[in-house]
Amino acid sequence: MLEDVPRDPNRLCSWFAEAVRGEIAELNKDGKNPQYEVLSGRLQSLSPDNTAVFEFRLADGTLIPTDASGYLQTEQDKYPATVIGQQENLISIQLTGATEPNIPRGILVVNDTALLERLADVLEQMAAAKASVGPVAMSVFHPSDAAVGIDFPPEDRKFSIDEEQRAVL
Image (cartoon, rainbow, N blue to C red):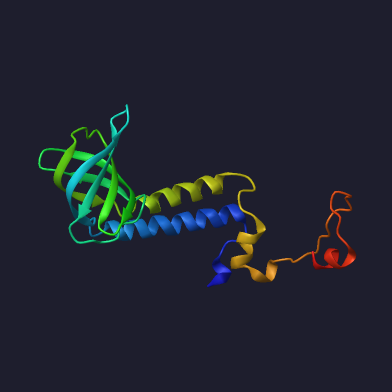
C-alpha cells in the first residue's frame, strides 16, 4: 500500500487533496449536517461591520469544535455562524448581520465539511508551489529514503561551550 504513495512532495500534496475531496463527497452523500438547539442568546460584542459575538446555552451540552462554521436559523432570520469557543454548555458564536441584543433560541447548523474543504484547498496550494513540502513529511511515508545526518554547532565565540557540551549537541 505504501508503494502507491507518491515520492514527489508536490504529488504527495495532490494525492492527499484528492483523498480529502473523496472524504468530503462521502460525507455529503447523506446531505445532513449536524444541528444543535441553542437557547438564551445574549449579545457579547458588536463590531462596526455587523459581526456580532453571542453567547448561547446549548440545549444538550454537546461539544462543538471551535472554528466549526455553518449558520444559525432563528424564527425570523438565518445568519452565517462560526463557533469561536465553548465552556461546558455555554457556546460563543460569531454571527454576521445579527444586531439584536437577544436571540431567545435558534438552531445552529454546522457544515461538517468546511474544515476538510479548507484542508483540501491548502493541500492543493502546496501541490502547486515549489518546495512546499520538506523531507520530514516525506519520510513518514518513505522511511527507507530518510537520511539522518550530523551537524555540529558553529565555531563561534558567542557560544562558550566546552567539548562535553559540544559532544552532547
